[in-house]
Length: 134
Ligand SMILES: [Zn+2]
Image 1: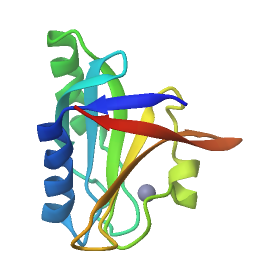
Image 2: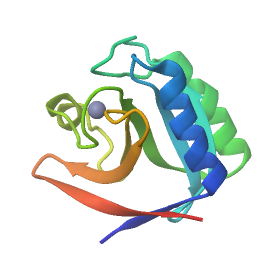
Image 3: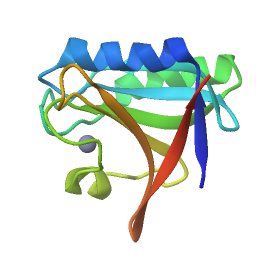
């Protein structure tokens, strides 16, 4: 099983981001080295939708600079499911253009108990990844 290691403050920051944008989906990028996340970039959901997200090219430019400056890699894309389970939707599978990156999903279906899961989405299969909060 592949895994992704996320520092506690970044993990909690993603959940806060999801709550702040709810009932719309939030999205962002996690950058770091290897399997360890070092920085999170909160991005605008260009769709402004409760069931899908996309990242505009302008938004992408913002973190490409940062990624280069800190010489880190893009490890994962995260987004929230304000009202559904933490599993990739049909749209998520269709829109998964980066099979080498993890997809982290924050589910707020149970408002008081947000659930965060990571997946590797490929056209033929969706694999669960382990998240270690460090
Ligand atoms: Zn989704």
